[in-house]
Image (tube, rainbow, N blue to C red; front, side, top):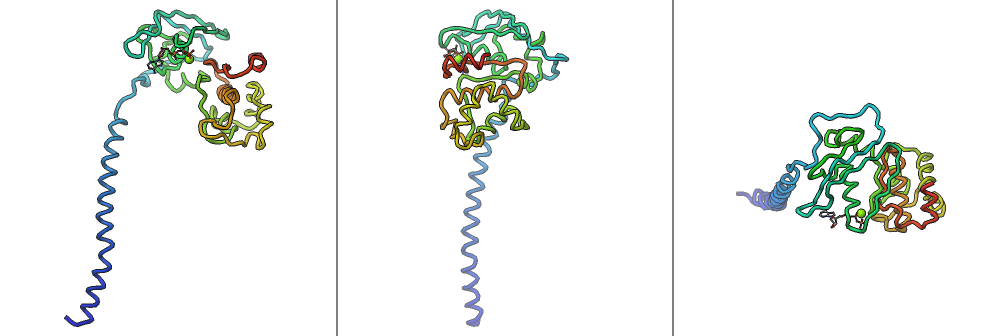
Amino acid sequence: MSLGDFVAFVGYLGMLAWPMIAIGWVANLIQRGAASMKRINEIMKVPPEIAQPERSRMPQEIRGEIVFKSVSFGYEKSEILREINLHIKPGQTVAIVGRTGSGKTTLVNLLTRLFDPTFGTVLIDGIPTTEWDLEKLRAEIGMVPQDAFLFSTTVERNIAFGRGNARREEVEKVSGIAQIDKDVADFVNGYETRVGERGLTLSGGQKGRVTLARALIRDPRILILDDALAAVDTHTEEEILN
Ligand SMILES: Nc1ncnc2c1ncn2[C@@H]1O[C@H](COP(=O)(O)OP(=O)(O)OP(=O)(O)O)[C@@H](O)[C@H]1O
Ligand SMILES: [Mg+2]
């Protein structure tokens, strides 16, 4: 072996060192990725309990009649709702009153099929909710949840979230109804104001009214306010209800 060959050999050896380290590194990453993927797949494979019906039925035009037929429900063993019978006519406004933990939120969750009743049927426009197309059912129901959830983006996008393609005028219109427009006008950046993580930079009442505006922008046939006005003063509450 000439001296030149030897120098070249050592040089090549040096060049090989890094790729060899990299191979070990990549192999390690692939192994870890595969292990994570296996765990994710386990969860993804679980079929959802609330499933889209195989053959869905829908009324021609949604009126918004709600019937609870001897509905009972319990989360695990204990029964929360027993033999609930309700008939709400289209256009009717109903208030459900009960002490905390009595099952008001549970009752409205049955309507949107977050859970299915243990016994009995929930019917909307005469069709059991279990036979409705799941997506259409939820599209018809505007829900203002008890714990308002806002995204870390602008006020406008938080409101328009209810309907992806909503224009600014529509956002302003529903904001007027939800009485959040005056608050927004006071913000330095108006509708472009960024809301902190989970609505951190808004007051409880403002959060509630932004979520109300979000529900209203979809113009739902059925509107559910789950304690949505709890954090709003009585004067503002009356203005909203009017
Ligand atoms: N996901 C759940 N899993 C198990 N139990 C639950 C669940 N959600 C609520 N519960 C229980 O069901 C009962 C009714 O709760 P629900 O949230 O419907 O009450 P509520 O009438 O809305 O009360 P509040 O006025 O405080 O909002 C409570 O006793 C609660 O502990
Ligand atoms: Mg509740």
